[in-house]
Image (cartoon, rainbow, N blue to C red):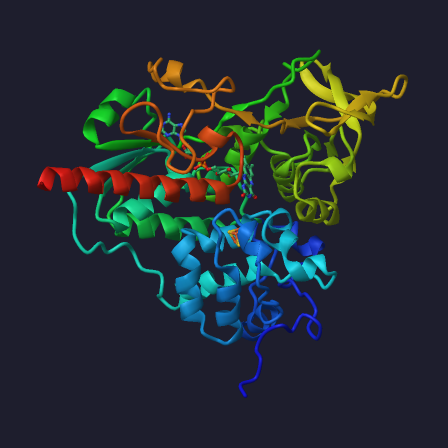
Length: 479
Ligand SMILES: Cc1cc2nc3c(=O)[nH]c(=O)nc-3n(C[C@H](O)[C@H](O)[C@H](O)COP(=O)(O)OP(=O)(O)OC[C@H]3O[C@@H](n4cnc5c(N)ncnc54)[C@H](O)[C@@H]3O)c2cc1C
Ligand code: SF4
């Protein structure tokens, strides 16, 4: 009888790829986790229990066929593992790096639930596709036949690019418009390199271009080209513009110099890593070097800001969050990484204003909180503890309070663009179709600030819906 390659979770312990020591990794912007060696990836994949109802798969937004590619990896059939993995995910090596696995696939792994420690699904997924790239298995789109129809995609983030990939593979002509100078959206200019090195994104952009996707970069829709013009040039348009309006703090002193938005701070840091000339970084306004930094917020963006500040050479980095550790929205893994790197968390602390010195921020007036009764959302609402206020010294304050959509109907002069009361675009579930004929929307601009994996899922679903629609139109025309 053949030897059972799987179900090794009792004999073999959960083992993540090696994490670089905090004292070393905080000196650079390189990724913090090493790659598995082949034997280690096989060993860790073999821990999967191949359970009848794979909760990992149902909790992966893409419903990745995880048990199958784990089994293929455990038995050394890596090229097949790659084929299975890429059949449901456009960017598996990116998701493997930055999905909050503890809340998705790994958090629901059956052996994690039974106390054995999850299968390291994300790290194996990353390993499979990084190996595929090394071996030349990742190929540009090569459609069987070219089609005359074209689709315009506004926004080169993961949502727009996932749609572009599927549409090109079906032979449809694709033009992607983006106001940034590089494709990738937040993969390129939001998420720091210590989570996702930029050559991983750049090789994907090149692959798409090699497969025939046309990129029109430095093209701000609404300014450089109108939405109507794009609509008139293509059979369908996908809006994949993400959400970029930073939530603000309206409180005494909030206009002082040295209080900046998270997205500006992270974007400047990422641009600098490409060797770009970034004036606001060079003149110190978006640079944490030598400063006492306070970051306000408890989500993943706040974690990226604190860890970027550490790497830029801040003298101290503190994170203020109004709830406690258990209730923070950011990933626990990222919080732990930040703590290891020297970030100090001030839980149950909220700003109520800022002190300044000649117009420059000098401190954050902090009020201490406790958690009270659950509010309408079911979460315990923070309440102020009277008499416990103090001032936290700061010469750079970074606001990481979340994002809202820009007002696209007004910005694009398209009052008929259907939006919700939150300003996100109203689009049908699983197709992204809006009420406007031929206009679709995907990713954060539909969901509000979300995750890369959800943007990929939306982009793929939307591309499928468009292909189906174009096919039926072509069939009617042929009749
Ligand atoms: C700092 C930060 C860290 C994050 N970390 C993670 C993480 O670790 N894991 C995770 O899963 N998710 C993370 N996210 C969330 C994730 O990045 C987003 O959910 C995802 O990128 C959304 O994809 P998208 O394609 O909808 O939009 P985006 O990635 O935002 O891309 C939108 C694109 O549209 C372009 N655009 C906008 N308006 C116009 C216009 N008028 N004309 C032309 N182009 C336009 C923008 O330039 C951009 O390139 C993070 C987000 C932030 C801000
Ligand atoms: S895409 Fe994300 S959630 Fe799905 S298997 Fe990969 S890491 Fe897990």
